[in-house]
Length: 240
Image 1: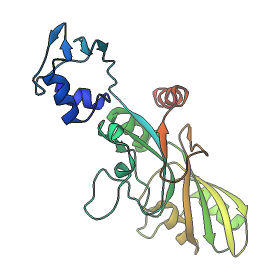
Image 2 (image 1 turned 60 degrees about the vertical axis):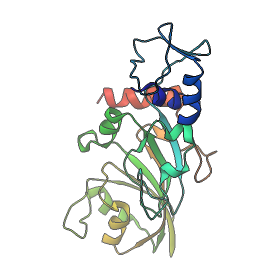
Image 3 (image 1 turned 90 degrees about the horizontal axis):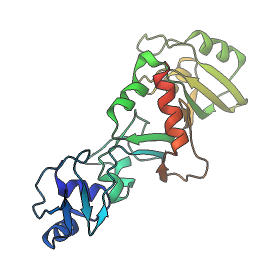
Image 4 (image 1 turned 90 degrees about the vertical axis):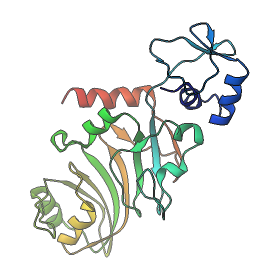
């Protein structure tokens, strides 16, 4: 990895600020001053210091975000604001990406990381990672819907969903529910309710695997995963 990118990722400043550190001889690699920002270093083997401070290299970043309405789950887009646009510069420098997608108008739990292996584990259809959503429904959700979801419903393209656990929180012309699914087809929750003649008017993901959305996070806010959250997430995937 280039030394200028490494130091920028480790919050020693912007690329321009890091260039000044290098130029002023404040960066040492294995005891020798380094001034060329394009020089590649191995953070696992080389001892890197900035003004005498040892650089503790962090390879991966894990962020929990409460995705707001109107923002898309992508790394870049020329039209719409993305979840990456909501990150501080130092966090964006790690080049994280969203694990899976939430629709533009869907809120809630979104994991962002640059750990491709963990992302693959969480998104693999073979893993059947449960995802729990809270939704408001235009129409009365009934026990018949619960039974249908438990058996799997047929979507508009003919695909039959895997069994899903539907919990009715409030039933009426405007219903409120919780739904646990173990797959992630395009617009799946919305299409499942369309299959039983109802419409989702509000959707928020609350849980993904062992992760639960931090209730203190306002829409658009995020924080690093705690060590406990990360360990439980990794342990769950390794044990399956």
